[in-house]
Image 1: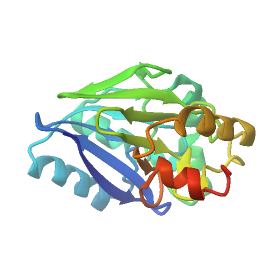
Image 2: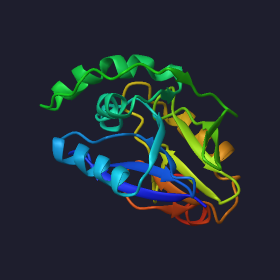
Image 3: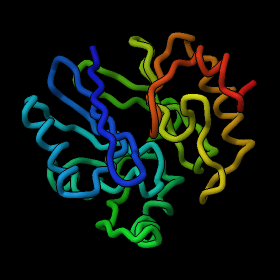
Image 4: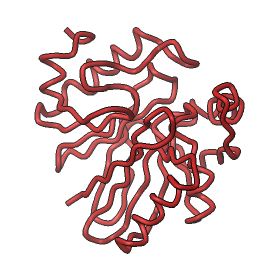
Length: 212
């Protein structure tokens, strides 16, 4: 059984997810910790719970989702997994941060490519990769069909969708991604987005104004 711990990090209020199961192996998804206090909060949780980090996953390359990737790689010697379409965004991340008056370390490059149908595994847990371009070219979601949960990055939010006015964004693509790949998932699937509160596929079908 997967435990999903949510951290809300950096001025963009980004959701960083730490997933672990009974084996104590874990992955960190969208490591957004920016300040030393946020970095310590993440590391303290890992250490206090005896967890063994195995991988850092990036759902997409926008700066708010990668602010802590350099830290987590250095701290735990992790591979970085994501879709290669977003490599240009990772290379722009330090510049993008400066535009918001912030500084971050250079974001490590992706060392494991994740594409449609690939599997992210840790402990006894497996997550399927779903490519969902639209918010950026390389957006991915992570789906566990056994436990019915989805990490949607910035593709799908409670009552909303990801912005499409940022680099790599495309409105038609994100709507197609959601309708063709996410809405067909089991209605009870719990959705953990990159910002804001969790939701479910059934709630979004009935209430999301972008999808009606």
